[in-house]
Image (cartoon, rainbow, N blue to C red; front, top):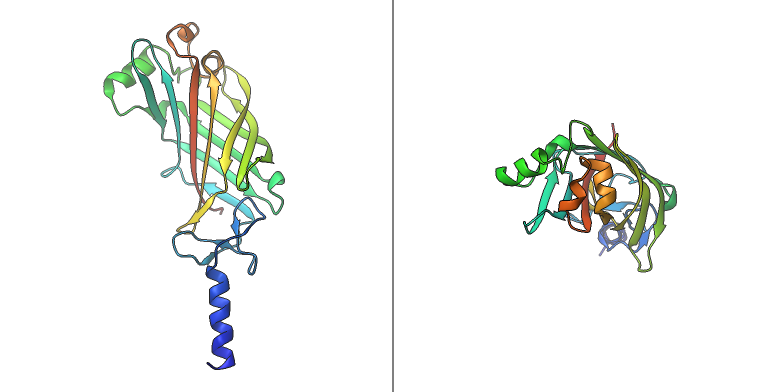
Length: 215
């Protein structure tokens, strides 16, 4: 094989090999410094910088036991904001805004309960914001703790979410972070007073963010 062809083949191989370094809070190829797209195995644009949250593909899911019902699952479908990816992951930053009126369980009866009974008081708390304060490496490689403030008009709470390395796919970055809140705290954040009496002990949180290069 001619030397030029061999060099080109070697370069292509380097761009497609599995990522081995987490240098920006994203999967990074050691040889090229590029973020590797999970769908194609190819390098996408440099991950460092601002990524805008795609509201059509991002969600905040919550789960909580309500009264005599089994655990109720709901999805907030209006999620906006941005992710600032830094070369040092600990300096990366996440800002998210969630419209509480976008909550849906997939059942009109359950939705009526959630909104009508004040489990989610979107009139008093029209939006939830999350602003990260720190990103810390977890005990296992590729895992992280995302510390931040979760806030509405009703309360401001410290929260820690667990997340894994984001996945680059289709030119976007996919982030997923999970955690939970004591129901008493969740009520302060979202609900009308007294609702905690009909809720289970905790509310689960599952934040999925699809982010595209910022404009």
